[in-house]
Image (spheres, rainbow, N blue to C red):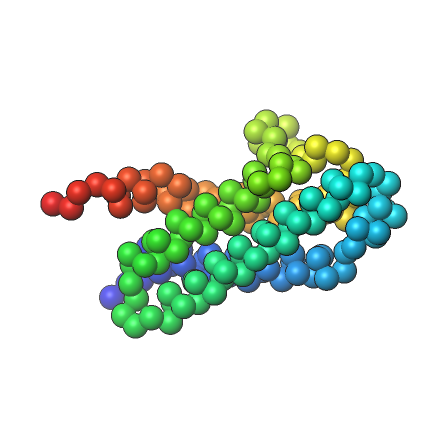
Length: 163
């Protein structure tokens, strides 16, 4: 019997999240407010909020990764539970990357037409931060496309009465 779509997407999401957690952790372990200010003089409060958003994103991705691993270990594989996990990953990890709660950066919707990076900062940002976001952006775009179903269709499926 072939793999279900939910299982394949859970595996893909797990691989994506593992790489994302590693990249974010490496950056956060090496970066301080002082190092950001030394690289690009700017608002300390803004840099504090940026790092806070990145830490929150790292935690969401770690939680999503753990959930993927748990789902993939279940025997038999439970499609409904995996779909719920993918829904949460979409709404917590993917959406948090493109529209963080503290609004320290945003997605430029015209980026696809201009060939520029989609993530833009509200204030001047250090090159290391721009490089980090650019390195994550392509994979986030791909994963968003893979999991878009879970943005709306899955929610509708869950609230519709079962026949």
